[in-house]
Length: 225
Image (cartoon, rainbow, N blue to C red; front, side, top):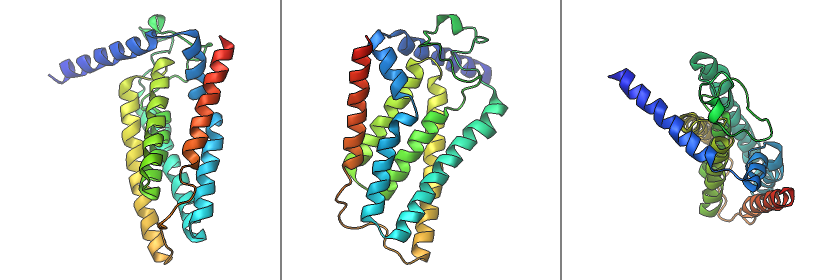
């Protein structure tokens, strides 16, 4: 019974991956490859840091930065160091994977050998959940969760992660953010520092920065066609 369920899950994962990966075009090849990158989002990360630095008590700012760093570190290490070497699920793009010949590869990028769980999903959703808990601003949360979802989509588009990899990574990111946020709450109360100001004057700055980055990626992808 368990083996039948597992086989159904693996087959469904393959079908979803090949469906999304098969809907490729020159524009989206470039767009998704750039979108999936880590360094291109540095301006958005800096804008989040600016909001925390500008609108929060300095003790809260330090604890927030520490909590966010620990969230991403915990999510990343749980996936990359603990779970991946134990599960050893090959990426769909891995040449040793039976479906590798069916996967559309963008610019030779195949990722590492194993892909379960997705550290991209764990990190982006870890950041999104922590900021959601911390800022409590609906537009910022909506944008960050949408950003994380599209990041996950880009990993399937590029053929380097299954949906199961991404859903598991999302859960790891959420758990890491929940744990670190409650640790932050405990420490901030201990420090007797205010945690949530009534007004955040620049809370939409990360949204604007992120949208500008996405627009820049789209322009670049158009020029590369």
